[in-house]
Length: 237
Image (cartoon, rainbow, N blue to C red):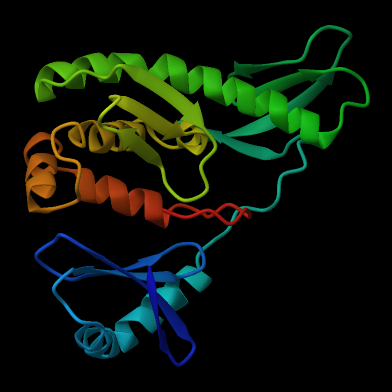
């Protein structure tokens, strides 16, 4: 991967088999990336980047001012999210195995006395993981029929740089654990995005055509994810 420097802006340059040049600015830090055709020389890419310099700075300023979630301490009345809705955490100490329970407008976190914040976090994350694995299979069944593809394996993990990924050869889809906190339509959008990769591996014109055909509101969902508050951890989309 090449890197371009324009003053205080560093740009990652990736050249691959595509027709057009693409520029993107990624949250939360404003990382800049250019995807360019393999035939395009670096000087031409630099001229393009210079022409977009003011736009890049404008996008980076937006991200810098974007709302961020406060670091979590896993204490009573702390805000946590599930399927796009805000819940208050209620920590309950008891002498049995730890668990989390959704009840009305609260998430009840049952832990043993003196359980550390890190272990409380682990209990809640395990609950999120179970919920997402329960939510997604009906969507998979729906979209396997519509797209005429087959998902062989679904997995959930913490991901720092993307909402999902697809191994098209193994037909395996990974979803970011953080998706459990987002609205259902955002979860479905990411799933469809990854399943469309079973039809087309690259983010090219054919891929976009598939997304437009099967999930027309995908741009709205993508914007919704990019607009939502950023976590204090440094991960991006």
